[in-house]
Amino acid sequence: MHHARLAAFWTVAGVLGTLAVFPYALALNPTLIAQLPMPLPVLVAAQTAQTGILLLLLCWIGLRLGQPLGLDAPIARAMVYRHKLPAVSRRALAGAMLAGTAAGLLLLVLDRLLQPLMPPTIQPLPAGIELWKRLLAAFYGGITEEILLRLFVMTLIAWVIWRTAYKAQLPPHAIVFRAAIVAAAVLFGIGHLPAAAGIWPLTPVVIARTVALNTLGGIVFGYIYWQWGLEHCMLAHFCADIALHVVGGS
Image (cartoon, rainbow, N blue to C red):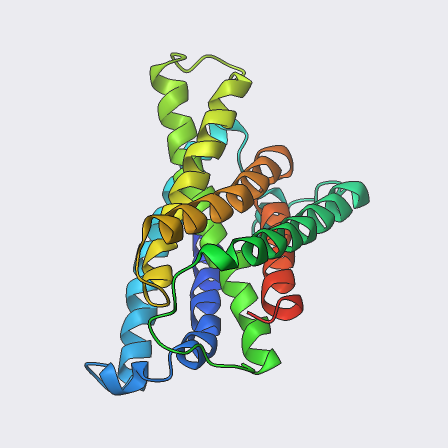
């Protein structure tokens, strides 16, 4: 099956990213272990299997639909299929790292500015989560979230717009990608509401803050995915999460 090996590659990476966030998630909510419906190792194994099956399907769909649109993971594709590696621009790599870091720092500043408007937390937030746990959490955002939101969701939205509104015209119009970038970014923001609900009551301010800040980051990552490929947007998201989790201490 075409794209299957590359889909399997990203599935493994995505599962590892999911496992990497467990220590941070448990540190953020220490009472979670007592509330688990099954022993933690069993839950982790079940979550790993479920995530792996889902990611394999979503990765294959994203790679398949992205092919005519030019949305791809060119570096990983060359490595997996043992093709000649594409020329990797140092400027693009540096741009992705700088854009991601700048986005993360901007979100930190905006988050601090919005703090006076936020309601009290549902329970006290743990202080001093170990650095290694915060570092590992960045791999979940950088790998797994980008597989879900850019490789699958953004690609699917772009493909639907391209096929319906533009009758599969080649090359795809830029508006196809811009609309998909924004739509996927908004869904990215909405997808963070369950995590926010574990920290604050979901007031209008909390909802607006959560969706808006994550949408801003999603737009940056989506643009990089469009311009340079999946690996670059993963790098940008990873750098943003390093700024948030390590510099910001969240």
